[in-house]
Length: 132
Length: 118
Image (cartoon, rainbow over all chains, first blue to last red; front, side):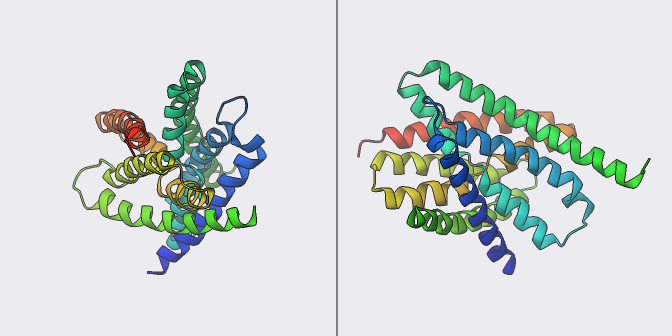
């Protein structure tokens, strides 16, 4: 199916975006803290939340394109595996504070930003339907 | 850096497709609201990345299989949106179970992969 190819191509962009963001923030680690991954993950959560309610759920673009952007691009821009590894690395290298902070920011931040994006998209939808 | 970009791009291409395939199988074929597909890729990917890091292969393979493939094979955004959606649908039990399982097993498997005697 062509959808797979679109998802793959969009995934390429997402992965590259994550890689470059990591490079941009001082090679991904600042003082032993994985800022690159955290930023990518939190940005991705917000954007996907917004995209889901403002675009996907309203069926205003082709399903294939919606899937490519959400599953492909944003899905690949964020990563769970790198987050898991980095958490373990922080723990095994006894950087307890950083490990705890990373977990807190990722778990809490992920939920908060996903929720905010989700709500932001909903609010923008309402403004469109009932312009004031 | 161009080579690294190429490797990340190629890995990302296949990683995204792989996740899409597993998600389609796991998130829809079961009759529950539990996103087994996303959970599967995140747990598999965390374990596999642990092994890749443990092997300490040359940078070529780290970029292709690690940053590229596993980075795209797993997802943090889809996972959190799935949590939000289940919470909004009053499916709180699923949300809590999904949250705890993903983080505990994900980090646990990453650690396991990294500590295998190789």
